[in-house]
Length: 242
Image (cartoon, rainbow, N blue to C red):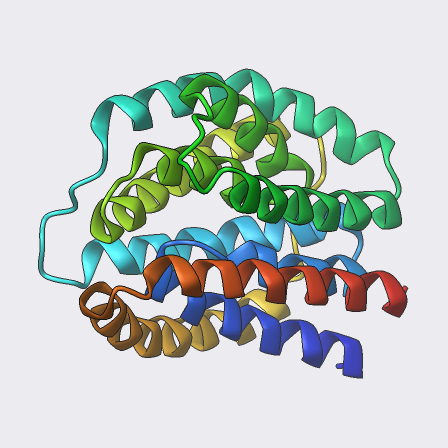
């Protein structure tokens, strides 16, 4: 493996930890270097597989019943279907550098919107779903619009985390269908899947302990902001690495 591929793998593990702790951040941290290390389509396929693993672990191993915002989840998933097809078009037409820049600009926009909208400005569920669906198949970084909607709703940390998890699983499935239906070759190298699956488990287990602390401490949104800042840094590193 090259140094860039090793760095991408480290970001995958870090992303699994952050997502397990907050319900958000896996692809934002992992995608920039994954796009730099691999071609865009295989990188999307790899991250969809690994993000599905993270979210299944969250739902299946915590011995509790998830409590997502059901109506919001249904609306966002419904609107993500046409968005996923639009994202495939972007994946097939834009260069890896353009996609990486798009990821970084999207995260910066989310940070700006959060700063400006501290009064809980409303970002509608349909818009969050449409944009998240497009991001799922273009870059796998569907979290920011969903997060922006949920923070605007003033949901509790547990419900934010559960809603994100369910949305990510549904959008990964819809994204895979959109990629297959359009004949887009997004199969990753099996070696990287085999190597990174255990790393995702390690990151998830560490992140679970962090979530328990965050939910009690009141620092949940602060950590989400830090994750967004780290994602911007990772995006800039990914751009420079190309």
